[in-house]
Length: 344
Image (cartoon, rainbow, N blue to C red):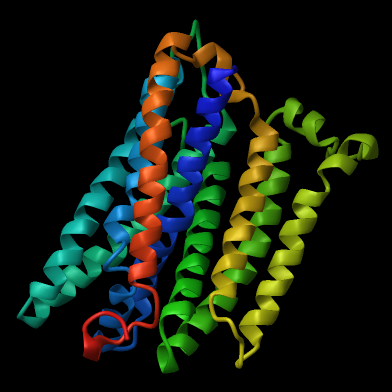
């Protein structure tokens, strides 16, 4: 049994679940900047109020799993990403406090402050995650299995591009979640922003994909694509990934342009599919490196007896968390209606 590979898959799944679940509530947080009234802003936050804190569970599982299962990768990655990680955590904490306090604010200046803290906390946390992802993909300077780079190595034109791309993706997720959970003028608001974000995501995916090919020759070799030539023998097996992404983007645009669309959950599901296609593309580009392009998952893994013991706990806990998460979403399924509390 290849325990390091199993744990790499488990961590990858946890990170992906975090992206598609916490991604939409971070996107909604950023969209509250453009809310046209306090009532609409309250409606937007009500769509995520029952689930937003539970969504962040997957971030803890991903980070904790990396620390426990791949301690060498954790020891190299964390010093390289200290600044964006600390910014992200501070923004998430401030955002969480603001989420609760904005409902308690009585005076107008206080309410404006906490509304801004929630919106910009969401935006800053998203951008910080983009810098972490961009810095990770770009690669980390390693000397003798120790981080040997500078404190700002994560900051580069490529990581800025990835941060902007992730923000557009989260806004798309948030807008499609609003489309599902609201009606009337707010649903039209979400449709408008979803179409804008989708155009940005299309451009960003193309730009990031091309930029990724220039990072390391092993990436171009994996895809069989360079700036000057294409190895069709290699690329043919991977062409379904970008093709699927293109088809999903086209279907999502058609759905968002259909004002009588049923079922209304389909745009969000299509957006999740677009994220999965992009995530799979990154996995193909970087596998089997946990520290691109220096340390593989087998080099970074803990001992097999430790991985096996932790796997027993994971087999019990992960299904439990998944069942609980599914139950919560089912419990609060339906359109948000502020007059009735949460959902009607």
